[in-house]
Image (cartoon, rainbow, N blue to C red; front, top):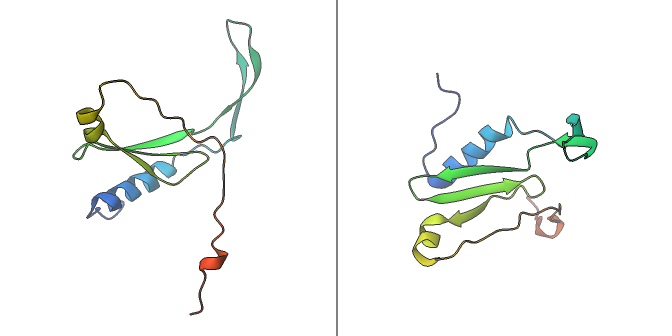
Length: 108
């Protein structure tokens, strides 16, 4: 059974993967639990989808978006493998911002 159209390009495939994963995205606050750890920590715990990852195995691309920034970001793993000899770390976005598009509007 086909549930969606087959992607024709890499960008279409990434967009399609994003839409499919969004169907199981967990919004912040929709699942609440009480934290009880062996270290004595306790308190409310919110489960949510912190980030979603889309891998392009053919081109060795790592694509992701975070809970706070839904723009898709990309990392070229092929380039990193060829140029980097040390481990790298990337800080994920932890705040939300909105882009005002008012000035880009035009008459029909």
